[in-house]
Amino acid sequence: MSRSVAREALSSLAAKGFIRISQGAASVVAPRHSWNILDPDFLRVTGGREYLEELQEAREQLEPRIAALAAERASAESLAAIRELAEAMQRETDDAQTHADLDIRFHEAIAAATGNAVLYSLHHSLVQLGYVMRVVNAEVPGAIHRAAQWHSHIVAALESRDPNAAEAAMRLHLNQVRGELNRDIVSTEDQGRVAS
Image (tube, rainbow, N blue to C red; front, side):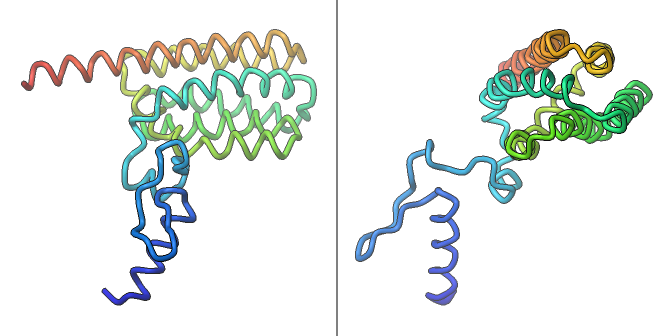
């Protein structure tokens, strides 16, 4: 590998926060808190599974407020699109990846319905990591059905233009998601003990 290629690769890693480059000194791995864990290349290589708990925490802080704003601001067209996605998820109960794609589109549509470009961008930045979580959760027996029920409650609250109900429904849905995540973590730990 030529020096220019190596230099370019190191510069790219530094721009993403993974390493620190000092003139005249060796490059070193940056502290984990400075890594851009939402970087698509990073997620493609690592899968992002170790960050699922932190992602869930971020979603619990962000998405209930997004739902409340969407209840106040969503257009009739936005509400129709959100309902259509919820109904598509109710029909799609067998394939975890298809459900994950629909679920991302559902939550993205709610974020877009706020009309707030900053909130939408923040939410969108979580989606790459969120895909991994959604596939993992959808593989828990009964998870897709439980999620579909909560999505129906969210849609009803949005359509009634009730920000408090929308916020509460989203918060309860995310509690359900946390439960699925915890079930998967326990299941994975149990499989690890059986394998050893």
